[in-house]
Length: 428
Ligand code: UDX
Image (tube, rainbow, N blue to C red; front, side, top):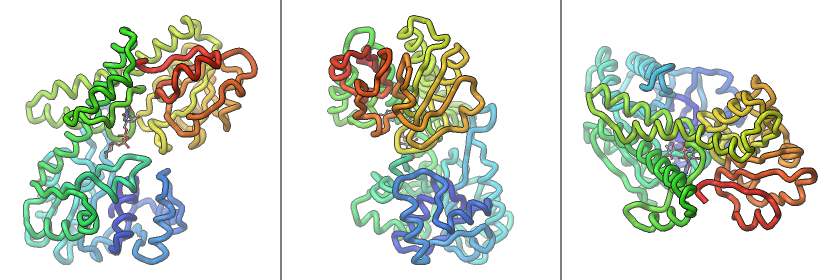
């Protein structure tokens, strides 16, 4: 597994747990040293226990020696980052191509090279070209095997996937990958063999569709607020249609994370390159980017446009629950904007204080819910951590009554209102 980030480490550990010999490689030696001590640099429930178990039984090893690891492996998974290009919208494939060059000079027997990183359509062809410069085409096969792991549920999503997608242009590599995944297939996972390019596109189309579904329900929630309708009735009412499905219909703040924002932009830029206009996904990107401003305007209304010196508490700042990931979290837009308007922001998050807010004026981390809401004028529920689901606000609220703005609809409005709080939420 080349790259021990979120995808490489989770997939590597799970492959080891299925009985394979796995080496996770990273050029960051300090990371490798930490991993060898069982210290996992990412917050993923259950991951460190699995790392320690498989490291102890020697199925899992760590290395910073890429050449040696490649020579000793039969299947090589490329799991390096493909972030959005700075100032652009396409995927930055520098790390992918650097790894491909390394592999091309280390092929000592037949290898299967698998891109698990999310890569634009036809990247596999480019990797193939790099390898062909130094190797005959009989010495390797380049395969696409995208991951569908959600942060916070990654282990479950690997072990119980809805489907395994393998894109290759030859039977041999498909046979080998199918046997690698056999333990999951025999437990009911669907296995799809397709061409390499279609596997690459399935990943982008999948994430873009999920982002579209969320943006759709978020915009319907806006209409609900104007028409006095409860968005949860809509989610249930449409979700029971099997063609729509009830998951991913929870209205909330703008979606974030390391995937939806990156992948929607990347597929649009790929389409532009191929002279195709993905107008729906373009509007999803625009709608989501505007959503934080929409919710900020709601905050200004709730506080009667008097923001200066107001104390606003954020309960949760990560992009969703069960992760410490701040990438593209909507709090990254809302907190600086409120601070600029003169508000005093306090925040609590179960995963601790965030470096992202260290340089922002009047923003402070409190290490308990109680301390974070002390003296607040407005308490915003930004992330749907379980820790917030049964707070007894009445007991916690000693001084002036604060207002609650529940951006994740985790409370029942009537229950909060009978405690005497002014309560706002999304689409209700
Ligand atoms: C996503 C895809 O789900 C996963 O399959 C892919 O491999 C990587 O990207 P992830 O980004 O970890 O996973 O998080 P996800 O659970 O999909 O949530 C993404 C964003 O959508 C979050 O900001 C979340 O809060 C938001 N969301 C999700 C909603 O607002 N409502 C929902 O109903 C679901």
